[in-house]
Length: 247
Image (tube, rainbow, N blue to C red; front, top):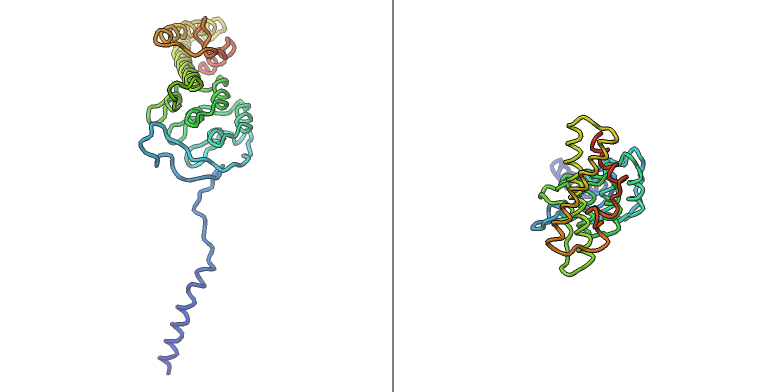
């Protein structure tokens, strides 16, 4: 009799297990980050010269001067996330902050300009290129600059124009790096020396422009023919670039 009761008790206990488990709350395995979206890594997309990004959910991010440079688990800052999400309003807000790290590189060494180029977003590319802090010469972990990530269609004038803009901005950044370093080593950082540095940068860009013109016809309204500089690169713009390097 006792054996029968024990057996019945065991059977009833086993039958209750699914109900007990169904009541347990499962914890989310999604790590907390400053943005929601797909956790799929861009690295899973193989045989592509540039790491493509998954689209993020459309949402307004809360951006302040204190959190503007925070990054999620993939190293994506609010700027990179906003570029990937094509959120022009957020991008403009982020670029308005003096402390924004425009050139932050995520775990794949991609910058905001890399992603703008991957998505071929002309508006965002122009917003970034018109910011004196943007460095178009930075390479990702596949040794590619933003220009290399812009997939140009042969015969497409818009693509050719944007590729040219990205190329000359990278050349400008390299010239600024080199000449600013020479100025930094010399120890003289006065206004006269800065102006001489700018003239040296212009000379390098003019030389590069001449070389490029010899190879092919460059798109109009992209480069200043007299200086070889991007049309937005005024003396004040160049001075900002140089001073950032001399800090």
